[in-house]
Structures are given as C-alpha cells and as structure tokens.
Length: 218
Image 1 (cartoon, rainbow, N blue to C red):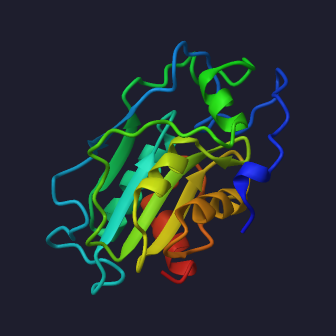
Image 2: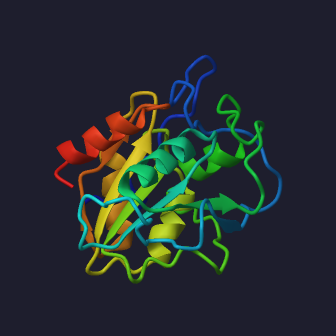
C-alpha cells in the first residue's frame, strides 16, 4: 500500500464544490493547535460484548464498533451497525468540538481542511482511547474528507495494536470511494487483517446495513 506521506495533497477546494455532498464534510477555521481528542462511549460500558438477546453474525468472535463522526452521519450508521451486530458503538470525539465553522469546507485555511491537506497531521488523542485488545473484529467508521479518512483516524490507527485482528473499515460519503482511505489507514496501522471496507449512504436502514455486511462476507 502506498505511503500517504508521499501522496500529493488534494487540490484546494473551490466554492460551490462539496467533497462529500452534504455528509460528514470537512472545513472551517479554528485557531491554535489541532485539538486533543476525547473518546466518548456511545452506549453501555459493555464495549465489545454481545448484548443479551442479540446474536453477532460471527458468534465466536468478540466484535467492536469504533467510529469518528463530524456531522453525525457516521454516528448514525455506526449505531445502527452496532445494533445489527449486537454490540455497543464507541465514538472518538475531539476535545474541541468541530463547529459548523470548523466544517466549512469552502474556507481554504480551516481546521478540517488543514488536517486533510497535510498528510503529516496527527490530531492528538486523549489517553482513554477505546480498548479493543480483547476483540477479534473491529469495525472502524469515519467520514471521507477530500477522498480520504478524516484526520483523527490517522492518530487512532497508529495508537492501537491491530495485530491478530480483522479490521473492517466503513465510511459515509457523498460518492467518494472508500478505497484510498483503507490504503492510508492500513499502511499507518502496519498490523491486522484489513478488509476492503464498506461504503454506506447516510441514513441507511438497519436492514440495508446488515445486507451490506453479509454481502461483504462478514
């Protein structure tokens, strides 16, 4: 897989062009250094455990659903996916919230755009990142920003040991492929068996999510 640090940065956005057609899109100005990230559990403390009365498609494997969301679309998909799998979703959040201004992709010199255009950008993570050490399968969700995974995912995958795990990336976007983001993240992680990934439209139903997971052979 290619070294993301050697890829040419994407062209600066032009007004009127949407990188993700209204999904978790990047943009917006934010002063100071890139914010630390905090992790907020999106459900009960039984992270990676199957909920009573629900059955994981792979009943012998412990499964986790971890995600980052900018506008909330990825959060919605992650929570529905977790419900279908019978686990709780866990969210990676920035300590400094991405405001609407931060996600204003029409502004060149803005927080999310700066992060997206700088392949070396590594937003700092809080100490209490999700513990997936006892999980066999990790579903990793994020929005696509300018053709690649949102910058907080770079730091996250470099902070977690995926050795011996199957990692299933999933994304939301307005049409951009998940392919480049999987290449970037798997190269940074340097461990784990990485699935080719699953693309979801915003507001996908639980049944359509389950169908895509099944069709992916998971």
